[in-house]
Image (cartoon, rainbow, N blue to C red):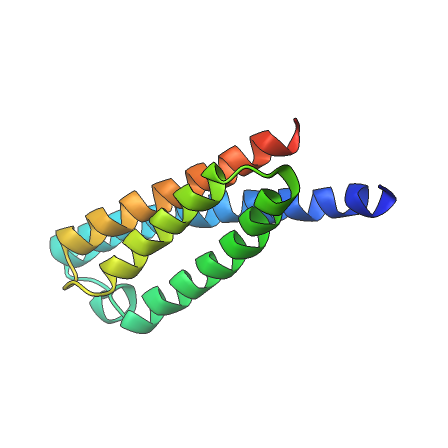
Length: 126
């Protein structure tokens, strides 16, 4: 029981980091479209496939640890399933050309991943 109390703050931080990274990702998508299409700035950085692959890897790692850990602990599959569907959307965004389709898939994905983290945090308190 003492071990579990020590672990909860770590999982809580990971879930909060996942929510913050999801918001940053959505903001990145929107700013990329505005800056690149509206002003012609930063296309090589904002649209870099490596940037998106690294972001997906980080999101997968954090969601897998925090939400997977939570699902095992509280035996609720919904946060895990929702987050994994979100990661699937984010992965699908890597398969389309840069632009509105990619942004829509990514924003749907990060919203679902964030929702998975939020649900995971809620189940932690039950």
